[in-house]
Image (cartoon, rainbow, N blue to C red; front, side, top):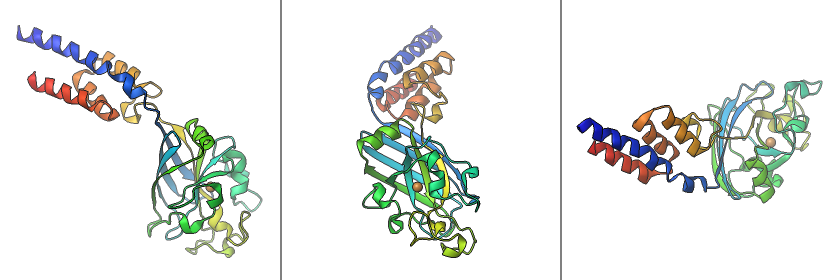
Length: 259
Ligand SMILES: [Cu+2]
């Protein structure tokens, strides 16, 4: 008698979780991710998380292995083939400068500055670019507005994040001895402007990586999880991961306590 009652309640819960999925899908926020990998043999790596809603974009970047204590210009590049260049694109000097990589990642469209203007005009505003700490790590977080065309490109997965700043001669600073003048601004060493990391921004699966349901919508992910019989614990976990249906998750917890 008692076990039959539990069965009925357990069956009812997946339907309760499924029903409120529609409001969650109405959210127009797009989440994107980039794995930043080295260029110019810097050994630097990083990750970038971007969320964009309308024309408001939030960018979080964490990188390691960059030249310590120096600013690292960083941008959304848009308008190339949405890829990171191969080092074969470097000239005879073996150093890949920003222009040589442009067929892959396109020109600067948004400058990921720490304050003030974020347009391409601030592309080389190194005084407003994040500096790596003493360990060569950059931690960057900022929310700002972008033009509609940039927002559309970012949402479509057509943006590439590039971080600049390379220490070719290993002397701990940007200097002209390391590679001469920048092709972008002769007053700057090319060390200050050559690409150090690069990563294509790609939309994350709806529902997030943690759901392990790449490419599915949130409701499809719910159904898939429920269909494979992962049961009540997984369903509640899904709601928590999405962070969207907290009231339902709480309700499930409440039922759990009753059971
Ligand atoms: Cu750039």
